[in-house]
Every structure is written in C-alpha cells, then in structure tokens.
Length: 530
Image (tube, rainbow, N blue to C red; front, side, top):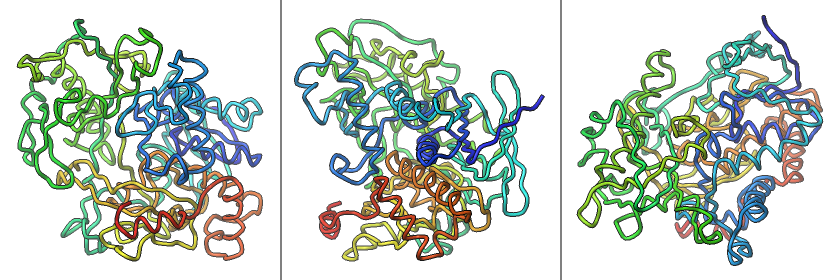
C-alpha cells in the first residue's frame, strides 16, 4: 500500500537546515512536508548530540535573526524550567555547561524542545507536516525536474510518495542527490582541479571523507561504579594505533591539527588539556545545590573519531559495518575511561562515569545518529574554494565579497582525520559570505541543498559545516523557494538576473539575514586576528 501527499515544498532531512528551510517557507505561506530519518528533528543539535560551534562575535552579530532567537529561547528555557542560581539566572550570556568550546552548551532535549516550539504554530496551521522515522528510498525525475520522492516509515514499512513543486535535500549525507541524478562530488578534490594549497596532489580521492563520531553523554559521580559491559570490539580498539599516530587512539595523547605534533589531553581540568569541560553541558554550580548529582559532558573527542571506512557511496553491508564500528569505538572509549584510563594519582579508570541514556533518548546511550562532518556536495554554479576564505592566502585582501551573498558565517577550516589519507587540517580563515551560486545545482531546476551538501570543496566544507552556517543556508533556501513560487521562476534565474537578485536579497535582509560583515570585522581580519 502506498500513501501520497502533496505540498509546495518537500524537504528530505529534519536536521538544522531542513528545519530552518521549513520555517522560512511556512512563514511565507507555503505548505511544507518535512521528513526525518530519526524520531528527533534538529540534526547536529539534537540527534547527533553536538551543541553549537560558533564564532567569537556570535553574541553581537554574524548570524540570522532566527538563529539568535533560537539561542535566546534556549537560555530562556533554562531560566523558566530549571532551578538556576540567582547569578546564573541574571546572566545575559547564560551558558548552562560553561564549556570552553561553545558559548552556549546545552542538552540535546532542550534544543529539541525549542526547535519544536518554533515550528509548532506552522504545524498547527497545517503549513508544516513532519514525518518522523521516515527514510528516503527513491525519486522520480523528468529531465531537469524532480517529480516526486518516496519515503518509507521505518516502523510500519509503509511507503509515502511525496509530490512537490520544489524539493530540498537536507539529509546529513546528501542522500537525495544520487536518487535524483543531481550531479555531486565526494571527498577530496585534486590540487590540479581547484588550485587549493591543501587539496590533494594527484587525482581526486572521492572516499577521502572526514571521520564521523558517535557521540554520547555522561555525568560523573565520584565514588560510584557505573561500568558498562565490555564492548564486543573493545580488545581491537584498546590496541588500535593508526599509522599516522604516535600513540594508541585510546590514550591521553593525540595529534595537534595545527603543528602535527603530539599533545597531551586529560580528563578533568589540571590533568592536561581538559576534555571534560570541552563540551560540558551541565555545570552544577549554575543550578541550585544538589539539583544535579554531578557535571554532565558530551563525549565528542579526538578519541572517538572513526576513520576506518566510509558510509557514503558504499554497499549497505559496508555502511552498516562502519556505523557499527563507530558505535563500538565510542562504547570502547567509555569502557576504557571507566576501567583503564590512567589517572594523575597513579590509579586507573573513572568508574563514576555514568552513561546518560535518558539525555539522548536511546537504549544503548549513544546519540541517535552519528555526527556527520562531510556530505555529498552538489556540483554548483559556483564553488567556494580555499582561496576565497583562507586568511593565509587572502592576506591584506581580507574578506571576499560576493555580489550574490545570501548570508554570512565564520569558522576555522577544520578537518578531522580523513578516511583514505588520514589528513587533518586546522587553517585560519576569514569570516565569509555565503554566495547564492553555491546553493544552485549546475543542471537540476527544482532541487536545492540545505546543509553540508552545498557547493563547497572538501577543504572549505571544513568551515561551512557548522551550526550557525547550516541554519543560515537552510533558512535562505526556504526563502528562495518561496520567492520562486511567488514569481513562477527558477532559482538560477534569481542569481542571473540583477533585479531579481536585489529583490531577493532585500527580502532576506527584511527577514533578519545578514549579508555582509561589519567593517570592524574586516579591520580585525586584515590583521589576521580573526
């Protein structure tokens, strides 16, 4: 039995970009069907259990109005629902976890609640329909047009055929692209092709994709023992040492992405580079005494990056092998931490680490979905290169200005170990604009990307893949679809027609999307301090 639904816009993938695309389109009065493979919308923020990675100016500027609203709502959620201390409650820059990598480190369930609240008015008015636990299985096309896509309910196996005027791929791995015949690339491009200093010498390597990480959440209660059952692959991971590493993966040592030299980590502050408060999401000192038994932290560390194989463009058997491997690595890391990790006092293990299954909503305590850093990427009308964003290359030229800017972002060019060459990269970049051209496929007319699947390279994906940028991309694409529906035009016409482009950019500005960085940022970046 097949079901059918119709809407103006069909969005496959309920991550950050999918949610913001749906929100933007619904605000303009369009009907949207949004599908999600798991039972949580929110992607990186929720089902992947990764609080936002942001830039240094995020509290003042450098994001969309709705992303700022999301951040404000997260803080207000804690103020309204949690017994904060008076100082924490009054803190305008409340950071529940006091993590040193994020200015707003929070629980996945809080992000889920806030995102759901932001979408709820449009769900109630039937502007947005969300199909959870639905996975894309096929698509029907005619030339340069997508006609329909089919999704399968993972619980009932019922298939629903979705008809729309426009389609958005907001899946974590770009899963809709091959099904629709949309041209795309994967992995590392060659230096000959892109001219990028950090591209590979010789031919491109399509499977040289960034490692994935299966995150999990733990709290720590000294004196208790929450040791998990020994993972099936523990002996393998306990002894594993990659050729490019000086120490075993399960150790307190790792490579510095900048210098390549070995650096020492530690569990808690004072024990080396503290990994515990790196992504801590609950600092009990922010709450009334005894409300939390202990500190809570997300384990998204160098020690559980998985690079032994790809889950993109491989057989289902190969994909499942590596998804299992990533899960086993994370569980093995936890078991090692509980039983064998060297302590500064000469002892071993931190058995007081408790797996917080409740915070991720799974039986095994691992996030619902692995943290995906790199996707299939469309072959776009314009591709963002390292030359457009690298601080070392641009020097005194500063920020690259794109006349078709549809947003802004900033993050280092950050690549975790890749699958084939095991390359890492951490290169200073300048704040950047998001050009409309990198959101437009070279051939297809009514399918658009909304997350890490845009027209970047393997290198520049490293700074375009973070939360605020994906939010901006999805929101822009949602407004682009509405703009085109209102005028009966194709997305590429907007970029290639000066009048339409200006009208669209004016719409974005009215909706709170920043298209340019303030001059003060340009001055800072020209000194290579950004």
